[in-house]
Length: 312
Image (tube, rainbow, N blue to C red):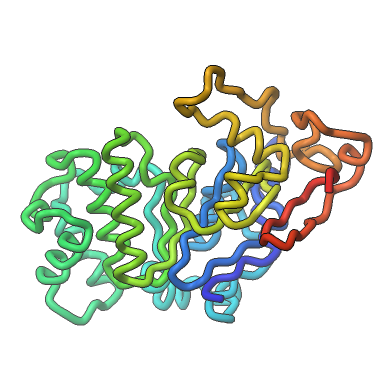
């Protein structure tokens, strides 16, 4: 296994209490695999990505768990060692809203070269930038442009190029298609699939859009209120979902054969005072007494699906 996240806990310490944004999450990623993290806004998807990069913003802290990269617990490393040996070299990230992540007063090339210099890249900087731009199907001459001179799709691909600058083995893509039209979204998805094939790249694809996820992921983790509700192969998650939350999310996807799009009633719970038992209990149409008193354990099925639900 390339990357294993075990019992990860990320808490934010605020004036109104401790917000348990990620609470005892387990996931894994194999070489050359695309794994999806999906759920509503506030479910903890992006926080997991930041935790893997060890970039959880204040007042957040990683309060427990392990993150094993090829067997080494990278949470045990000091910040300097992790920055020099792992961040961007072995694990990189395309941040949510990365189209605005470039500094507007510097050319794109200069910002990518800065990454190469900081991490001690041994080679020709100009040639590396050209190589990266070709990798993401951009004309290398665009590297001489300022960020505002590129379209949204071009900036997104340029940021993907920067994330690949040091040949990482894992790429975390946090909502990489946000604010892009459907044609460019499809282009970005196809690009990521091609990069996985060409570079044997492992990708964690974070999104709230299950329709996008169905096109790209091999396996998926469905998150709600800092907990994983269900995980399994894409063909199971999308064709035979077992958890009520997963089913409701899929029913909310707009398709041509639907006359009515169903939403999920209610709101995400306050994670400073999470509900007892299953965190989805206040919105679940199948909730029973045990759901309000005891947290369900994961039930494993022979088809690879795992579900935390008292229905099973």
